[in-house]
Length: 299
Image (cartoon, rainbow, N blue to C red):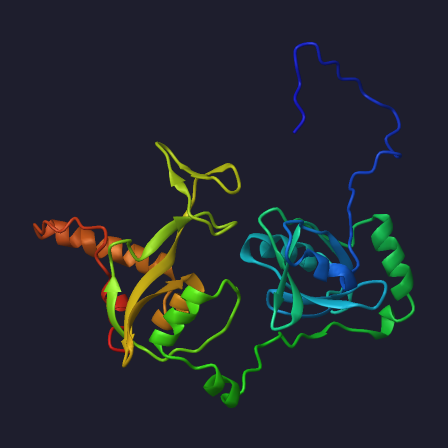
């Protein structure tokens, strides 16, 4: 942040050609593994060679490739720039800043962060060099259909990693490892309403935000939010033949299970509660669970 004071002097300059409008610290894709377990957010540059929906695959000047997930806060920007291309079926250069590097099942993937900026065919040295390398094959190459990396789980693997609730709890208490995958077949016995079934979030980073007098505030992004959205956070009481515990479902998983996104259900729920008030109902409990969510009990 640049601060101006009363004694600050601002003068116009004649020639600004030597002052770059953009500066990036682009990382080779083959070195992304160094960023998996730290908090650095590297910039990357590459040609988009495959895509599907909000996922793309890029190739850098050394021929290395990486898959990229563009979250909703950046996808509109990406889509708008892409539609302005003369021919979006051809590979195009893209610079993505402040990316998050994740490792899943031994494979490195990139996802956008709340700070990410996307630039397509930007006139900077990194892009010019990349285009020079691609100049000959660009005319005969088209963007392919990306096969998004899946878990590729076999029935045998599911069986081998299926455990009961008692074993799961025991494992959690004895290990400090993270990102482990297990399968646990349980039955939903209760929807825990004490902590509500949703939270109010900022659409950009999807984090919980703090209500203020006239708006909301995102501590993570350090900005005021005028149009927040609700997201699922549902606590399920589950049991099997060995015991019981609580599973927490977040937005995407809950949406797939319930069949409706949180915003639509929230609006319907508010409308239903308003009608109950008109019927002289004294039920003001914000933890009341919508019937659509209660329908998963017994499953």
